[in-house]
Image (cartoon, rainbow, N blue to C red):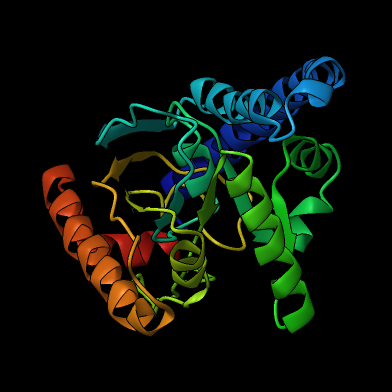
Length: 266
């Protein structure tokens, strides 16, 4: 390693340490405020919409103090935030959560149970009404889908990443059926979202932050009324193709190449 590279790595580590410290302070402050909001709103807000919005604002605040990240949103604006959607998006990085939280309406996230075990953050997710699932356990998936139905019935959208995990190569992985079966069963529209640029923001297995410009684009909702479970495979592939095609467009608009995304995420 050259002296220049060594100096750059040291600077990156120092900046990352400061970002982690500042993020921890922001998270703790929002945790106490969320607890107060929860106490006063939970009895009248069964969908936990209000406290959930404050949790997403925590993520927005964390991005605002991060000098390396520039996140933005585009696309369709949701006129009625209390119309429940099954939102789906491609998955590039842990940073996807911070990016999608910039959208100005509440969605309950379906996330792996390990995230809920992170101190403070996990407690905030539970207060917000997010949904935990254990990978590889059919009973856990069934419980998670039942929880999703509950949130939709309470007029709150749910957010599902149908790839299940992010790709090691940057290529779009196959989509699982669960989100689409849920949408058809409940008659909820699918709300496709496209994430681009987060792969290098926080590489998998690293605690270091990288400079990143990322965007989430919301596509027009796709109605599911009148569809049956037999239509799920076609619906799934239609949405996957739409997300894949739009991601390519976003990459081009942002000057990002697939090669650079793959390298950044490694």
